[in-house]
Length: 231
Image 1 (tube, rainbow, N blue to C red):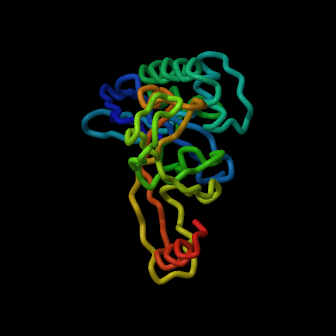
Image 2 (image 1 turned 180 degrees about the vertical axis):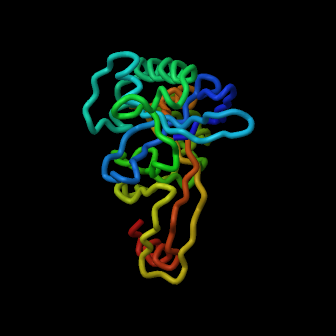
Image 3 (image 1 turned 120 degrees about the vertical axis):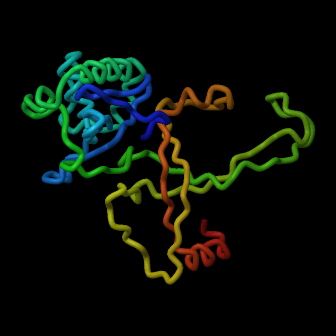
C-alpha cells in the first residue's frame, strides 16, 4: 500500500521520507509463488537513482530479532499491531545508513533491486473486498440510538468483490468474453485494525494504507446482472 509521501535519497544510501512507509507485496521473478511483504524505497544519488525493495521480515529479524514464519504475509505483518510497524520504521531508518552492498551481503539478501521482483497486490489474500458505490443521505424517522435526527443519517452503499480476483500491476488481465471491457480508477483503502461501529473521526486510525487501483468491468455483463439484481 502506498503512503502519501515519496521517499527521498542522497549520498548513495537508502532514504525513506517521514514516518510513512510504502508497503508492497512482492515475489522474486525467479520464484513467483513466494510472496513476501516489503518496503519500497530508493537509493543512489542525484546522478543515478534506483528503486529497491527491502524485505520487511528479514530486516525485522536482522535488526530486532523478530521470528516470523517463512511465508509471512502482509496480512500477518499488519495483524501484529502498531508496535511491529514502529520496529519496521526503525529498521528502515537503519537501512538508510547502509549501502546496497551491505544489504545484499546477507544470505538471503535484505534488499533487492526492483528489476528482480514482481509486484503483487499490496494485500494478496484479503478476507473481504468491498466496492463502495457512494455515500448517500437517508431520511430517518425520529431519532436513532446514536442520537441522529431525521434527515441526518448517511449510508455507504457497496457491493462485495471477489477477494481472489486481485492482481498486481504487472499481471495480465484475464477478461471474460465481453465486447465492452472498461476500467474504473479507484482509491483502495486497506483496513489494518479491526473494529465495529467506527466513527468517521476514528476511521483513519484503522487504515493500514492507501493505494491506487483499477477495477476492470465488463459493461455488458454488468448491465445484465444489474437488471437481474444479481449484484
